[in-house]
Image 1 (cartoon, rainbow over the protein chains, first blue to last red):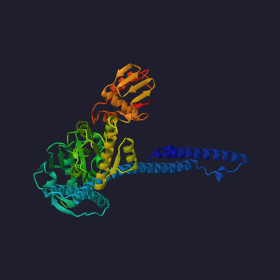
Image 2: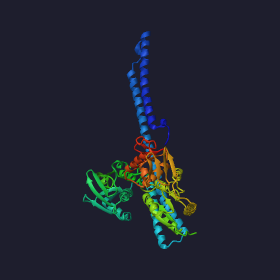
Image 3: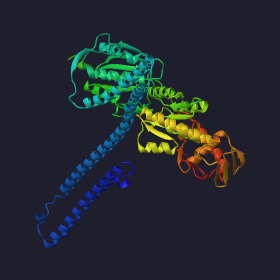
Image 4: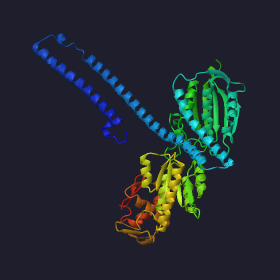
Length: 320
Length: 239
């Protein structure tokens, strides 16, 4: 759709069809009035009984016509909006494919390079283990990428999992950080429960951990300080339970705050690598929050000032 | 055949693993290798270390590979440069080749093929240098437009303002404009290619140079015909 002719442009077609429809409504009414007044002269000329020929329903006809045209207009408008949305999604998806190709090709390139090196040269045991560790990291990166694609498909198809179990949230988060401590090596993570009592909640454990993984790895990935700090706090703001994830990362600009939860959206440009990752993480996290009848919001004071992601869950479904 | 004096190869690549892998293989092959993790670091290393060949990635943080390539080509048209990129479309290859890259290899690549290409490039460039190549850019040595004449051999211009000596930066920018004549250049691109800057540096610098060029080369600096402004975007040079 790059260099198509101006008369194929959706906005032009939209405006044109509305004008055409408006004009036709005007003409319908104009002709109708014309014809009926012509009939009137005929009737008076031949001295016929008017109600025999003209059931005077002029206003009814005009009203019906207007309603019909109104419905058609609404239809056109809806189609137009949907078309625009589809096009936007198409562009984002294209962007995503470009980025994702890079994300997939990079670890594969590295793996291939080292495997071919091993075939070609006899390396010392020490060197070998260094490069094998690189390769393992690459395999992990690759499988993370594949997982996020697969998870996306799963979450979008309605029947996924839905294995809700009762769990204590603070403990779940602590356990998660402990299990994945290799990912947060240089970070300081503090967890505080401001409610003062254990919080039992119905969650899908696998999904909830995926959400935690996305929020926490983002806090580390988009962070330029030597020791990334993440503080997680639990508090009740009736009727909601709030879990806040605040970090000292690179922060976000105001205009992108709302967009970051969109599918395939990435901060930065794809052509100069200022955009990282797949553009799926926060979209996934938001979908998971929705599955739990909650919502994720974000606040940031601006670039370089960190960000706070807040997961708000309805307090009432705390105990089921 | 092992090289008598170690030839130097600069690898500009932001993916650490790939960079390490390339360094390992090239070192085993008998080359001296350095790694630069970003476009600006790469340019710095190229200026200071003067490598014999450059392996260049395109998607780099800050200044991208294409700008690095253009920057280098403004000063040196001879040094062999091989692009190694995940970008595999024909458009990308054509873009790279039109900016003056010698070879283009897409990721993932075959190690053996990569090493052979490197050796070919080096062998050829050694021959060119031996044959009297002066390592100068693709711009002609004497360039005339309007009633102006620029002589790059002695950095002098015979122009509206009389005969003047050009500074190194002026020469670089003139070459950039000449090799992109008729094409719009944004201020950002001019900064990236001409100065090797990325990010927040003020674009006023570019404007100041343009003002100077107009004073040198335009009959009516207020109403330029060669160095045209494109509103809120950048500049266009037309001879």
